[in-house]
View 1 (tube, rainbow, N blue to C red):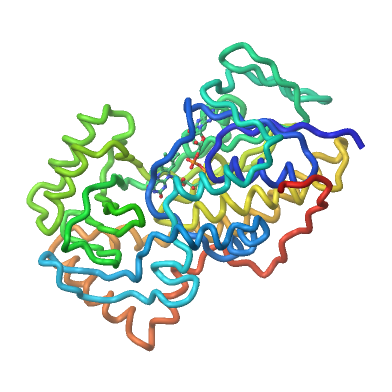
View 2 (cartoon, rainbow, N blue to C red):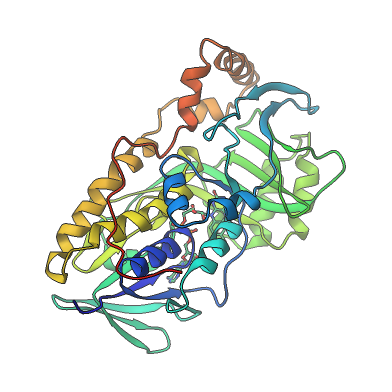
Length: 400
Ligand SMILES: Cc1cc2nc3c(=O)[nH]c(=O)nc-3n(C[C@H](O)[C@H](O)[C@H](O)COP(=O)(O)OP(=O)(O)OC[C@H]3O[C@@H](n4cnc5c(N)ncnc54)[C@H](O)[C@@H]3O)c2cc1C
């Protein structure tokens, strides 16, 4: 059998996992990343459900465990930092999962596990794609031409190549929630738990420990306008206005963000598509199905998608590419649907506007953590679980 060639666009969790597993299945793989160097940064992501199995198959469980963020649990606090409620964090699927790692650390760990034959080319993204019966031809910005059997688009929620090739099929559902993530200096009062403060006006403040001697902070609020369209100074000024008078650690976080070089703005947007492939092109990770932090498990789904894609295509010849891609989509879709279907009450519940709303929310939190309702509550963090076994992968290549 001749070696098949895949071009993967995007070198984060989904793209690197696809590259790893396609190589393991015997493909020749070229990865194109828009950034000019490896993209570090990002906050806590967790490995859940079937993500554990894929990580173990990659031989990376212990490497991820060794880079655990050190977070020991999750608590809801009031405006003076007093603990109101402690969330269950025992077992693999607690609010603080057993395997919590920073996004950049996870991406770097997979990158280092790639066999050296997999080339990762930085700073030269796709400019044009010709998808034909016998090959997909990719031309990069610099004019390089790559002829391949498959193009995997793993460019995240705002993927431009997806928008180019799947025009009219991308349903972007903005949830009306902005989240700002950033790294700030650690202080002696920062403890080992994820401290989560919800207040009126649809605003939340979060502090989480990390394993790098700093603190990870999040400001989240209901917001109609997308801050990712603004420049950093303007977006930060808007967030400062939105969080004025909030108290607790908000002023410290706002000041910390001014001096932080990895502030990441997200206007939570689900991506829904009728199909995740067309011809010789397929989508993986957030580019295909962004579930947002409101759904949760985006990193686990991205990790799993690389394995399932390679397994679904392994053992199939070039002529049966559509069958393999259909099998990939059929396996992944139930996991994605499970986290994309958000109940209508979840946003007003998570982001109460009034004092009454906040009081009701706090009473509900106490009830939800009671021994009677705790099993029901645990379902919210049970993500990426499935009764379907992972499809087998035909190991024709070696990935170290
Ligand atoms: C720098 C960074 C920080 C993040 N921080 C957080 C966070 O704090 N909290 C959170 O919940 N999620 C964060 N995310 C998103 C999170 O990583 C994803 O939701 C999840 O892990 C799924 O990963 P993905 O590989 O599908 O997409 P992403 O992790 O978004 O990766 C997409 C990759 O594609 C690259 N790319 C984009 N466009 C192109 C193009 N045209 N050509 C080639 N490459 C392209 C990007 O540079 C990136 O490396 C962050 C993502 C990035 C890239």
